[in-house]
Length: 190
Image (cartoon, rainbow, N blue to C red; front, side, top):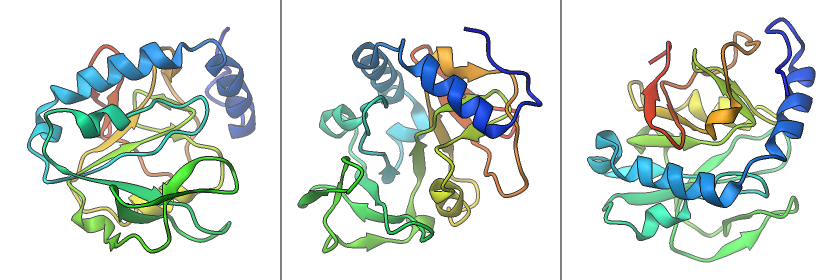
């Protein structure tokens, strides 16, 4: 399935990515990407790391929490539409968001985004320049804009969803790295 032209609209790219994602073996991709991340030095030395609890059709990074990595694991809580994601400690009670994914209970302690050493970020597709195509609500762009300068922003993505170039807008926050089944690589923004 050929990706759209780089000048195509974000909606065209999202449609392509949604179709392409149907062919991904998510269990195999999750296992391989988790293995790659366990050996990545910045994550091995991190005190705090943000991961995402997967929606259907996303990489599952939860095995990282059971690995030899010793960082404090954090994740996001999704608010009402238009508000910003918040960061919370993992390990306490979880609840089901109305869209069907797990997230920390509202009583979980909040952590300022600037306190996170490494941020592992989901997306529909990414490019080698660090551009990320999300689902279109802007939640992660607002969160990443509040991250500590210099903290690695790592797009987590199966290699078949990495493209040469995506459309980007001024408010889009570029990833410094991409984690695939093959390696963690620096992007042009990194």
